[in-house]
Amino acid sequence: MLAKFFWRPRNALIACLIILGFSIYTTSHWVGADPGDGENAYLLAAQLLVDDFSVSYAPPDQFSFIDFAWVDASDGRFYLKFPIGTTLLHATARWVAKICVPTKASLGPYVVSPICMIFFLIGSYLVFRIFFEFSYSVIGLTLLAINPVTVCQANLAYSHGPSMC
Image (cartoon, rainbow, N blue to C red; front, top):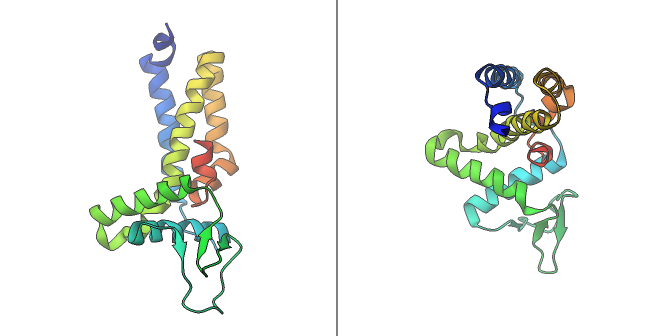
């Protein structure tokens, strides 16, 4: 019964076109990074996890600047204060990019948020279809896809995209 609501060819095609439009729009306005502290911490921790299999960071000297996203341990090493989930997603993307396109491995983590936001839109549409008829589900999906917050969070390497997913 539920498959009848979700997978009518016309309904699925319209939902896929909206999600494809969102994907094209976000990739055409994609900006790699912003100077945020948290984003840099996620990306550095992902790099450390891929290269050293640890998220601890040992600065070159005791006078190095370490931002607020790291916690000081008694041995002089710093550990990421955020949960490891987003770092694992970024590390996986970096590892896959390192294997597939070695010269562009550092860009791998930047595709995590757009992909997660696409899954967020698919899941939102499916939830809307449980509670609403098709036209209202498409309206809800469209409003989420054109929402400036959704578009902005799809372009940042923070944890907001994976959290919404």
